Image (cartoon, rainbow, N blue to C red):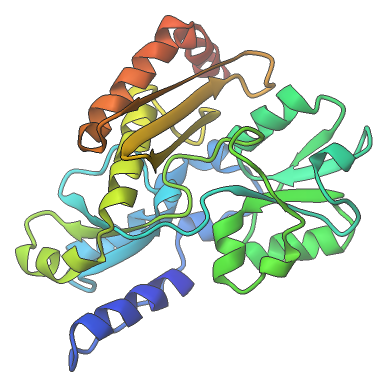
Length: 294
């Protein structure tokens, strides 16, 4: 809802006198909170109802966290704009400890992400990783109730909701490579709606869009979804797009990673190139194991 209100404000500024109305909806991804996303159908659960509303003419556009948008857009819909990114990194949140390295053996860490779980299991095998679902308030409440010693969340969500003070440490990409699209907002439209495409075009941030497109192309080429522990993160560095990525088994025991640099205009081609590099390192064997686990 914060995201929708944010975009509503931006559109109102850009279109004085226009009425921008929010149609609030609770999606299946918000309702099923007792199981990991990987078990109940993945990221599409957060956007399906919104797309139906657009198809039926009840809404003109939908606002999404880009990391929650499936890598392959459904036919009939397009991502028309990707706005400037908030902090894309993962955040360490705890009432007892200042960082991952401070956690003792047996400490319980909560996360809803297979990506984060694989990283934690690979680098901190002495920790106990438990699934954590629910909205931000619910997750923080479970931490405060003592169910977890620490939880890992997207820094962007905490910052946007005014909860920055809960962050004990922002993890570096070297510690926890972000998910494709993390920290960025996407505007989805019905394909062919030229009028709305013109309205939302000013919300697009070119650098963020190049980075997110590269990340998503990389993820898409490796079948990225909630069922695949995969990280992909790009930045514009000295005029070049610097893309890093990894894929791993859920237990973190097998992981391949690589990075490359190139022209930002070649965003999707760079994503495909990085995916091919991981395949050359043995990513296919990891993906094959994940397929058998589903």
